[in-house]
Image 1 (cartoon, one colour):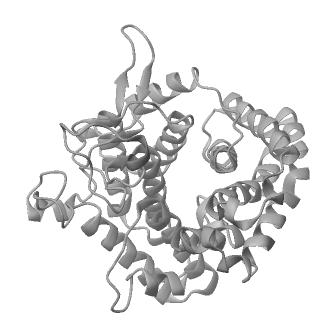
Image 2 (cartoon, helix red, strand yellow; image 1 turned 90 degrees about the vertical axis):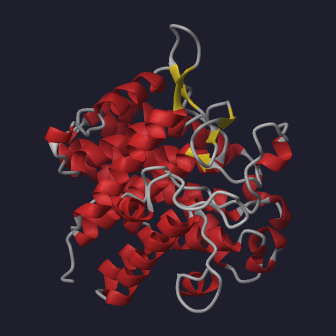
Length: 375
């Protein structure tokens, strides 16, 4: 994580290069290092990274004719509300113009906003608020949640269920990819529940996430949860880990959903265990997707401890513990310096090293609350 800070310009003289998904995990890693060591330098890295993300990904690109905060707020108001207009992904190419035809291959390299990246940043801000006990981080997370839900959510069919656009423009005024990510409603729901459980909202301002929670709850009734994507399986387990904490430590009654997540994860892990993905050569593998799975598998230990008060959940979660060696195998493989020389590693070096760090020490990302160090 120290190498990442230098390489991506969080500290030092390198030009900052920010990417929202990677940076969300990195913030959680720095918070974990701070809490494990008590060294203020790691908290400073987390603060610096949050500040950079907001001032770079919360503002228009250098190669864009537009300037200032993507929310359209004034310079002064943007400083107070840096997430009100969402946050850019951080892709190398600018978003396509309104009259430019879509190119499925090129779209992966173009900027814009992803809903599931925004939920990751909401979680990172939530963790910042927990560790620092500073209200601003919670407020920014809620403002981001409201902006994302209001702009990404749409009615798919008349009188039909709502959906979430996969990708929106930088200014959140038009969809760039109309389809919906398989687990986007789930990511939204768990993150909204997380924020609602841990924030001190001024009810006079009528700012809350009840509508967003109701919408995503309804959406989750219409999506299939099992997946053959390792990162997607990791996401299921990640959400299950956080939901188990919300249920058994914060009194949120969502046991049926937790059971459904565990069942879907078991189905998915069975298929993954029978696949040959981990037997392939380096060039045919993506470390960060596999490491997402290993991070999720580590969450099973939290789930197992928490669900002991519920026989059905305990039985279901205990069946998942046998998949633990998959995480060990993934971590061992990608921790090997030889495998880190491969093109598949170096091409995605930033995200790979950050997610390997998260997998090696997952509590900063997976555990919602813990004892606070003196600051």
